[in-house]
Length: 205
Length: 205
DNA sequence: TCCGTTTTCAAACCTGCGTTTGAAAACGTA
DNA sequence: TACGTTTTCAAACGCAGGTTTGAAAACGGA
Image (tube, rainbow over all chains, first blue to last red; front, side, top):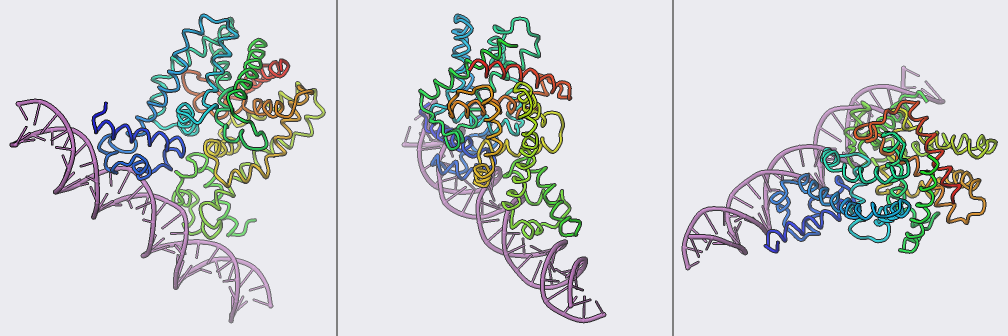
């Protein structure tokens, strides 16, 4: 782990994650990555077999980071009343709002992919999205015990969408005309608001 | 309008709109645009003063196309019961789902911008988004007559988000595991579902 | 310490990009 | 028709991108 070559690999990954999140795949140059990582340019080809290979690795890490966070608490949810489980789910989905942290970067990387999914991303999703979608579907099922599969699916996406609108447009929410301050208490407030609305929506279905 | 030079301009705009929508700004090359438009490469610089100028024009057209559609019916809404006005609003927001038409392209161009807004886009938004946001805020205000400005704003964004999740992820919804067929009747069904849920949510607030 | 392997490095390579150029063609008016 | 303007065009320019190269350096087990 602390072997010199591992250090180089790690520096590249960290720098690439930041830059890919910020600018997207196309607009991020290898030269920019190596400059930030303070590493020789050829190192990327040596360690990751090119820019695309590096991106694949970054994508994997982002996906793992985002879903592990939510999946780790899947066990808790079962023991909670459904209302609380929903609130906790929403609060966690909003986590990337609070800070300029890792989760926020991971979210951004995913945002780029939702506009035009790369083949790498598609593969990753079909292979590994099931647990997270399953967890979400199970959550909404507690509110819609009699719904058919299609409605459950739509409800799950709807729920995820509740949060992602705010997460995705974080930067624009911070500015006028909305001017939301995104400190922890505001995010809590927002999470409660969303919980109430979503709850009511699911109850009406 | 049918002057030869106007034809060239128009062919470039049409081709650029398609390509920018499909691949985004960075990944769309001038050479690809002129190949599709069957026009000389220098024509873009001549007519639009460069790639960025062309993009600005495409963005303007997309924004106009999307909001005119909704603003044109703003008058109708006032005469409808609030429930129907809401349903109509949602149905119109979902329009890009139905077909691979112009509205769908315009939406895609906007999607690219939500990930990392260009300066051109920011300017356009602060200058011209007000009418559309106003219309949406007025709509939610009919359900939340006592809410403060911040809550109204959040509710408006929430409402827009209800729809944009589905619009944005159209391609992925069409495939497994959701496998939504996006014909008109499915979109109608979805619009009704969203209307009911949103209605309940707003009532609970 | 020695030696085969792994890892780093500076430089060059090639390709594709947006833009510029200057001349030819088309246009529109008098 | 004649002539100044507008519009098209093929070619080239300069630059930045990802990748390759071959040698130097660092590593690590014998």
